[in-house]
Length: 327
Image (tube, rainbow, N blue to C red; front, side, top):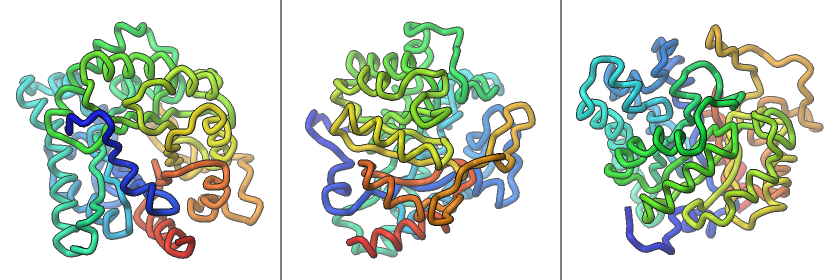
């Protein structure tokens, strides 16, 4: 990771484009390819089982126009991998493989698209919440048994492992509560001073995080962490995003990164998705259409847009087409 404390890897893209395009769901594409991810490691199990499949998904998103690849490390923790009889060294190597696979896909993409060499896509190391390790859906509830110190202890080794592989930025995502965000900010300041990150929360409605904290209060609590370059929300229903972006923008001038899910509802018991009932749709008829909603999100203050669960390369391609039209 570069030592220059002023370096912002996002700015090379956001300063010259109407918005930055984050990729879409990794696990969804792996499932579409036939992989069974009904597992406590989720997409991280494919790091060992079929790493080329992960490269292929990253490459598909780059080809669709994504400026960022988020790695297959969301649910990859030392504790979770070592519970599968891996040594700590083996578990660390597997976590770091998530970054090398995304970097491989980027290298292959740039070789075929040399015009992007002046502003290459980024590799963002996914850092899932403590709830993802629990694999019980608590990243959509919060209410952890761990306090702030315990959350620091949980995240410390994985952050060190990921940063050794030199991603461009950490994608700290789907945080349901402000305490976890504060714990990660503590680690960035005190133990990883050259690291850069974005923090994306999960939200249960148009104004609150998954645990009920007002998103304004959460943003205010972490806005002074200089290493957090962008704040946003992910894996949240589309109809809440416009309001959430407005709430975030009221508290910070930083980049705002949003990558909602398709609008479907996740059942943590069956680990399946189903259509939401009674969900309001875009006034112009766009329901699960990222590009259709994007002009409203940009007007509210978003600067980076992508997709989370149940989105795919076609969604990212539509965002790319929209950005070309706006340029």
